[in-house]
Length: 491
Image (tube, rainbow, N blue to C red):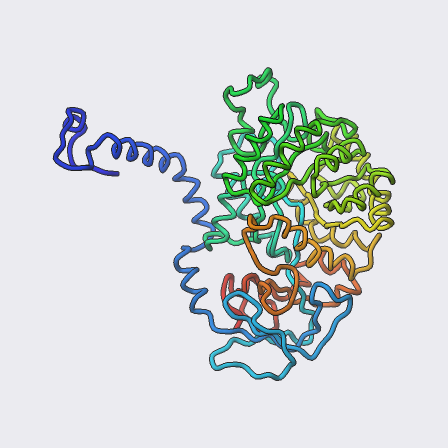
């Protein structure tokens, strides 16, 4: 990168300019090495969109937008109401007012044609990097291909109406940054980075040749790619949690037992001890954020609650006493309405055995959550298959088995936003999400049909989502006569 003398002259200690000083030459070598290593990846991400400077300039130049002629679901109220309009400025809802207030000169106009206007959907359990490729592909494919695939899937996620996701495991930091800066198209991402797991726990997908492990020794491939962080003591937990927070995690995920996608685990097992879990909770609390723990059986859930964890992921095998404990302690349940094998990528062996246990436990879990009033978030947790990830809206429609449509929609909008807010000052998007009210982010959907009457509308987003807006910018406009322009302002 820097060049003014020959290498030989520099090695001889030439001092004609500061470029040849050893410190600067070391920095030059390091930067050059990093650029070579990351060049293809950066180019791949850049190819997904447009320059961040142009994006920022366009955002600053955006005139106000007035949205009219809609039936409003605001994310909270369990009924539609009309007679209102929205004014959007600088990516936020400036004002919700009575219809007919007029528009400032130069403002864009969105006539919803009497359709339903609602907040963008939030998926509380998503895996940005692992949603569309199989485990074998993730372990063997070129890193550039993995990021290109994740970027394409992020755009499809947004096109299904999900304007925000909480990423619960995987190296999504770079893609989040690319989306936020306008280099790529996708939802807002709340990243947790690598899942923190014990040796042999869910998320430990190492090869047999990686065992035995020596503390402080070289990392395995799955650790070096940022998918998992192995910790087998309270001190190691603190280290791994602090590393993810250092990288930019908005919350931490720890694994309290076995899981479906890890064939060497069973759902009845537990992993971290209470002191180890507490070490993670304390390390996260030092950064004013929280820990979510992957746990299915009562024993794993109870350990997490005893350690002060604020959110349980899954919980499908909980019993009634454990449900009551969660409610009494105010612990969130972030879970998924899995009802049959089509809701997951094909499983065999122990993984299928684990999946069948989850499917059998789903009705009881939701029954307990309702009975005891557990704070419950909706998520999809779809993994390892581009075909299965297309069912994201289908999983939302499953919620009508246990909740009213209005309750399910509130859960997937304003309710999930309350869970995201647990990240406090680590929140990458400080502001109101999941609602349509003054000051909220302008993440909006215009729906062809009434989702308060039919959640199945989200199972076919190509047909039923007419307008998709994020940050006040259009990403889809299928209104009659409207030009669908990716990333433009609605005119």
